[in-house]
Length: 325
Image (cartoon, rainbow, N blue to C red; front, side, top):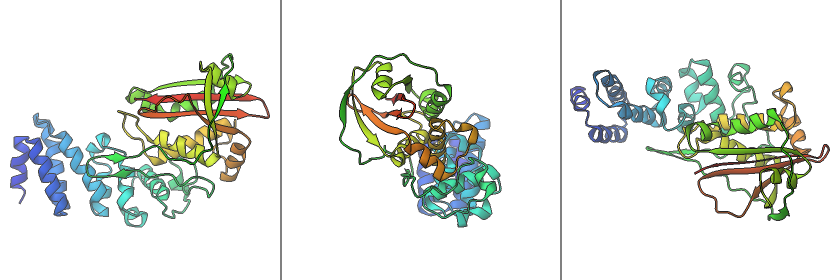
């Protein structure tokens, strides 16, 4: 039955293999598509450059295939090079009820459960599932509705969240000396790890005594425009950045993005030794700080996140800029 697939892979005709993948998806011939994937993956051992086709076929099986075949695709060798983390891909078109019986690997089960919870499914806060990230599986009512990416046959769309923020206010920045704050700086840089290690991203960070005029001044600014943010808006922006791969990096996924937001907020609360904080406590700690997004009115090109935070009780502030074009 698969003689034609063997011949197709033997020729290593990548364009024709992709057309056959499209046809098999249209026919919903998932078993044959899995066979083509495996043949294309195995052909690499004989020098045929068919691995990208195998990766595409496995991605399509995860996105569109029935729950049992999609679940098995999570651990296929091609999963490492997929468009996005397959634990997020599979969560788009499959429910946890459909998938749970087919995923035995504990970390994969946990990540898929988190991704389904981000898409609104009610998932029990099971300790085994929660062990992969430790934060509550279901977002708290005060957290944002995290915007899920949209995967299609050939890519993913995950634009920056569009938030309703107050009009910006211009401030004059002050010269200030940058202090060391290793925990918060490490939490900030962890958000953008894919931007800086897999792409061309750059992150600048400042921690100072004084208000945001001083922390922005420590970044080298003379003027800036700031808009206040609510804690839920901060979580939305940081989760988006933490989930993204930037311009050229591999997307890390919504669950990893939400983890980054929780870790960052906990670091800002100086409570990493109490990780993970209860959801209500994290919100209360965030409300004790004042959060701002800032700009210099330059055009936004590519991927960008710029925040400033002021602790009015201790009169300290932090600011960072992250960009990837």
